[in-house]
Image 1 (cartoon, rainbow, N blue to C red):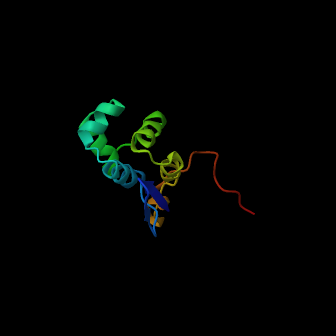
Image 2 (cartoon, rainbow, N blue to C red):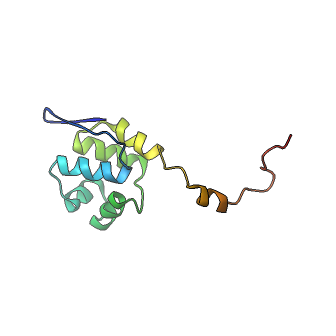
Length: 105
């Protein structure tokens, strides 16, 4: 992945979570959580929760974040869409809705 800000390029060898990208983009732009909250219309605590991955912003808030930080929206959307797959233990505990059992042959 490559991120641009004022002619600087950052290359990462691993994908980041949406929260980590939000935080990195905000910091590169030189904006603190309170300032970002004022610009987006959210509290500093909400911004912090997004960056920690405890909550997720709406699509329009992600778009605003990309515009404010002058970073590509595609990167944030890709991170939001690539949720980590559940572990095998978590998957085993998931309840399948009735009628959606896998076919047996």
